[in-house]
Image 1 (cartoon, rainbow, N blue to C red):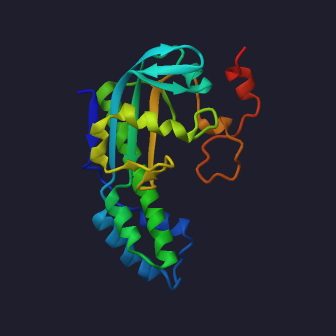
Image 2 (cartoon, one colour):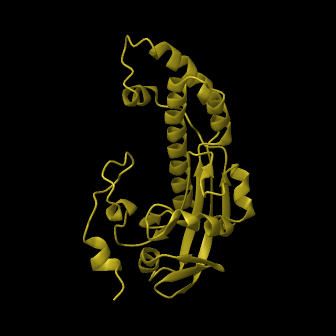
Image 3 (cartoon, rainbow, N blue to C red):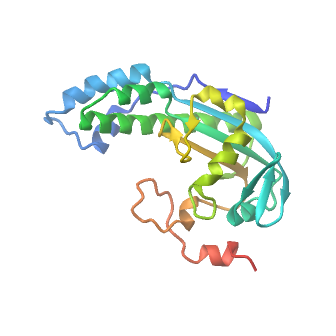
Length: 228
């Protein structure tokens, strides 16, 4: 099987971690409500993930052809120069949490739900990575995500969803005309095996990003990715 759908992902919200992140200390009047609300969210949460093996058919240094779908990105081309296969994926917190969040009118409870949805998405990604390593025995990998860099803009989500194929619909994630995913706490990307350490954040100058995983390297694009 080159396509894998994960819908039995274990998700038990970390109460202590969430309360620390939300600054809900003992004695906070919102703590009791959050505790009850968290139990309700955990009850309905169904994070999901989908990934599949895909093969690179052409790489001309400005675009990459993956199973008949073209992607225009210089950074992607360079990173995949010596790669023959990739694993394209979609992970989500699940529409069940999104629907529960949509029912809430209180701004604080909406924020609490958003935080739990992010945790559910992280659980989906952990399960995806573990399954990928177990099933395909991949070595060291890096990842790229459409929309994460100006060089690979969010408009590339459209062909990326075409590459994912109809089977990815089982996750319940849809793409809007403005290339945003619903539920919002969803992510797409591709894993590729590599010996180098590449993280999107290295090419992104936005220092205030809450999801930053590596420092910005201002000279990296010119030294490695700028066309000759």
